[in-house]
Image 1: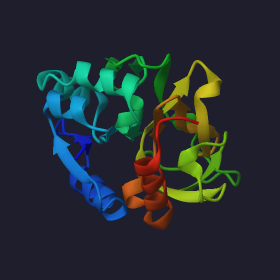
Image 2: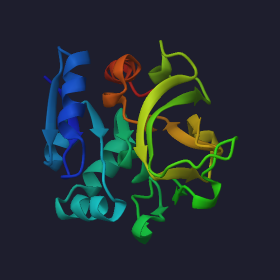
Image 3: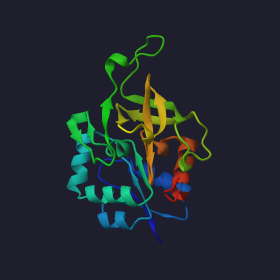
Length: 214
């Protein structure tokens, strides 16, 4: 039986992600792994993460997982979560770190000077808690999820793709930022579907059933 690989590079919210996947995909084997061969053999791959970008890149390389993740992103249904989204881009302002370069663009920090709501109240960084996600394009992973549904975030940085056609969803804090990207077999989100109750479970269920096409 083929399996769903959850990439273990020591930085992800692995237990919550794997348990959520097991819940929505009882007929699938979910394997948390740092073995490149197991990632290559998987039918689909989830690339989660949390923590600082430089630490994540260092751990990814130390475990010999860089090539396996890049290959998976090129070949099979691939879901990136939080840092798993940010690492797909070329460069992050967090620690002046280079990403994997799957997509052109940068990862930027929320600018302190902009962190005020419409009434002038100060907004906190990190952006933590529930926020609406607006769907920029139709996608199989949005099936059964209302536009403007709320998902759970914990982040201080956001992606800025060079190619705006990558944008699959956005939120506002207070300005609009890209919260999801999609191209071919890749879907990646800044929010945490494994912490987002029914909407998050629906997105994960859609991923398990997705063949990587549009």
